[in-house]
Length: 302
Image 1 (cartoon, rainbow, N blue to C red):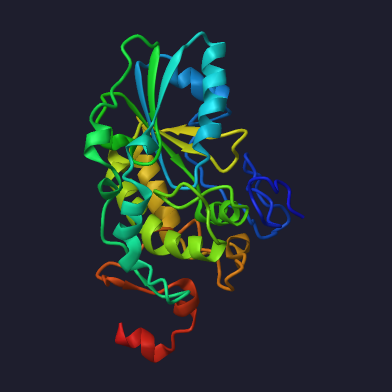
Image 2 (cartoon, rainbow, N blue to C red):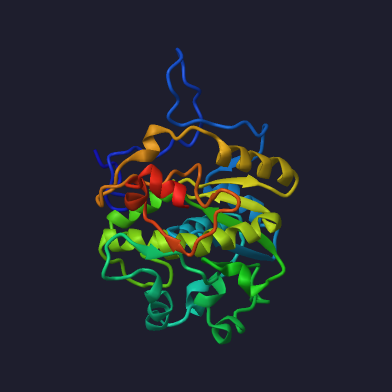
């Protein structure tokens, strides 16, 4: 059963907004990690109250976020508080699509449906400095908001918010043709999109996000577009990061994160995204399908 066919194509139900512990020794498909009371707020109204007292807000985030929906919902909540916001879209600063296609072409080996090379560039490579330079806060607005992947590159002095999304939800949205790859304006075939996500988008966005972690004021979970949840990092950042590392190193991979996509290989775990063993560095990358076919001898050669 596909609950939201207009924006996600899957039979897997969305993760619940609130955590409910498993009972009677049942396996918990949606595990939670305690970070203490009053650390997370739910809904756009709650987020608007946190942002309304600011003058400048930077909404950065992962690829696959429904940015325009997020803007519409949040702006409606801000207006209810009497806050008139000026919104600026980071996508207007991206390089032309044709230029980005040339940038990533060597990494996705178009002749091979599975094999590619991990992208070695950075988020800055997708942005035109000449387009970014004039993107400044509006002095006449109650609140100026810059939103989109790479927004922190504008170096505004303001509240920095990161809008995150698990990779399995990105795949579900791409199947529904509701999103496109980083720097693109139209969705393509879902298999081709997944390959580019794996070798290009996720490679650059994981590195970019790692560099932002120590600077973030809020982290927003956007996998429920109608009811996003925000967690503050300002006062307990060390605790939050320790919790994140604990999740990354955990040995469990819940079954609901292993739904097979249409290319025939497992979806990437949302608990282990972007994590690689120390000392493992290689420019050539294997897609999950090829990795699952390794023999023990292949692993030893690494």
